[in-house]
Amino acid sequence: MTYSERDVTASDWVAEHQRAKDSGLTFFDFMSAMDLGDGRTGVATHIMTPDASQREMLTVELAPGESLPSLASVYRGAAWHEREAHDLLGVRLSSHPDLRPILAKEAVPPLRRDTALGPRTDRRWPGLYEPGAAEGETRRKRPKAVPGINQEWLTPTPAVEGGAS
Image 1 (cartoon, rainbow, N blue to C red):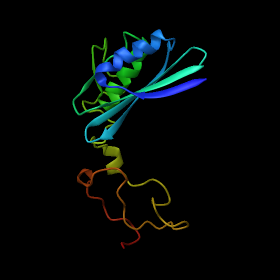
Image 2 (image 1 turned 120 degrees about the vertical axis):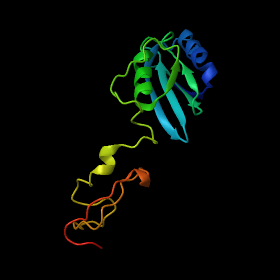
Image 3 (image 1 turned 90 degrees about the vertical axis):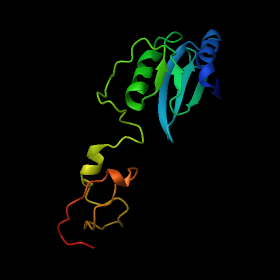
């Protein structure tokens, strides 16, 4: 069994996948996209032979506003994965046959770090223990910010019953 990982450029994205397919890696397993911060986006694909004896992970990092050529002409199964990446993270794909939204009907991609998620900022932590509280401590002190959100997204929170500290 052989496995390799390679970083490629956006301009070589389709050519590298075509090369891999021509060498026998004909099964498109998955594509994943991730927000790397500062407007950068990472995209990774996993391709392999039908018997999984050879596998390859190809990754690309996109600069803010940079688009990625679609792999739908090489691997038909990539079309849905690309739609999902476009829908949820705003990955810009050139020459894609159909970029209709799958899940998110909002204008902004919901999984980007710079997208405010209302339910995360408007609700108190639902658990008995506050995040970071000492074990056994059940009394709520002051509502804490949810990790990973910007302070300017927060709305004023009403005082918590049981006193303040």
